[in-house]
Length: 261
Image (cartoon, rainbow, N blue to C red; front, side):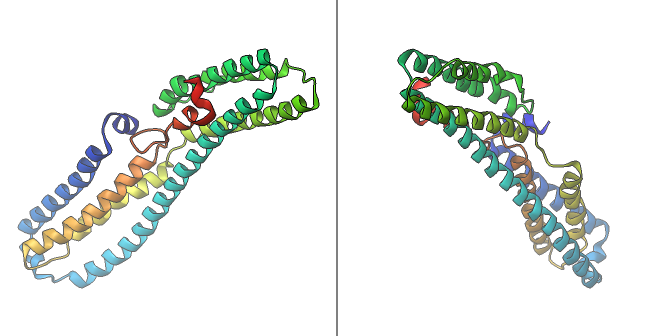
């Protein structure tokens, strides 16, 4: 469900629904509770509620900060993996320039097939949360086959051949890491802590009484908007290949790989 929402709605729309919905529910809940229990406006229990809010707010803030930092680090790591894989493919293309024209042509054809399969076949599957190792396996094997069939004749060709093979092994390694990251998501326990904590903390703000209704609504709405925005960050960062803030396949179309498009 989360993947479908990320892939079918803009970040602005999700922000409006998440933050706006959280604030609306909080304000309505606060007003209804105040009407049902008018004595709350006197602030008789504010000391106890304030201490409880402070304690819960500190614990929840630490948990939420940990989750957001972890997800942001995961997104940056995924971007680095994608950039590294594309760079290694580009290095193979450059190394192949030292090979005889027929071999170089076969390497280019194999690399072109691989980058196209990554962007056009595997990327949509990763966005859907269903990465397939087999989607690019044959194309990668074709690159291996071309290099394994070539026997360098000169020292110069041998040097570039060894570099190409080394870079190809790095491509295979980065490919596996990329697919592993595409399957990652926030563990269920942290999801419960992040979203369940909001369900506990926001209602606590209803109990903090203030004589003027507008001031109380402003207080409740401020806390709810901050929590709603934090939950939005958790939601959009949880899947590195889905949504508008997702990792882009652009590195596979830039630099030395641009000619394959």
